[in-house]
Image 1 (cartoon, one colour):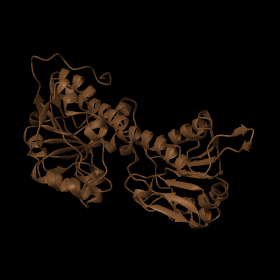
Image 2: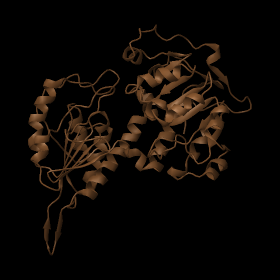
Image 3: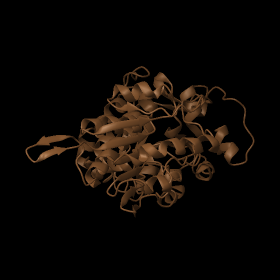
Image 4: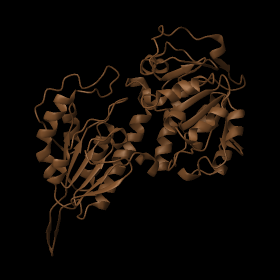
Length: 414
């Protein structure tokens, strides 16, 4: 079993899918690791670091694909639709691709890569279950994004976050409103509170109010009926335009009284709900800052645009789409841990066995044997649903090195 780590070629992407510290558990499970030269440099990991951990360095992306059974990527084709197209000429039949694939945003890319007879795992689809928490790339990367969003806002705001009492007078604390108390939102609340701001938080899920309060924020409740805000997989659901219209009306006054607004509400596979209108922005004080973490999918803030800095009536609106890549070392460390534990979940008795009946595998496997096998993606492509998963075929098992010790048990890999 040979795993390749390639250098990310998406514009501005500085993360790497596997860091040197993660090689040991994979090697213990019988894997050999090859790394494209320079793959980790942008994240602070040199070729020499990988070599010291036992990896083999190869000179090109083509060599990495040619010599491997499995390829780890932060951004596979679906999440890298331009530069990633070159990989269509590099993959081999039977090769396994693991990483971020944006399957719900770019299902056509999944079908295109499936046509190359590859097996693909989209880690964005990790189910929200206890034993999969350590594999959840959306949560780990959202943690970084929420932290970074607050730092950006703090730098751009023409006032400081904490209250200061000085001989020159008292400086009032900044007021920060975080909309959406998922992983990114909760991290934003915690970070803003540590910096000394007065923090308000809102989420459609009633249970999130306690989480907001536990981090030192004040939970805002607009008393809207929001049952069914999550699907059975634990991801946000679209609540309909009537709900969002009422929400915007109630939210506008809170937005206007704040110095910083950070929005994090995203719905997998759908346009982000509009939460902050242009009228609400017009009512904010000059110098206020808004950061829209959902800008890539239409945005929560009406005037926002992806990766664009907008000055609107003296208010700054930012729509960053890849904040995790701006903190590449720790983001890579977390991603690497996620992808390592995901693969080790498939190691059974010295074999890599792809069991489609396993909930984690069934949720993330989007292509196999030349076919798109995930029914939600098939529906998006206009394809008929397929039968429930069957036991693994013999050709889905990749023998490991018999001289290696047995892999660690599921969920305990480090």
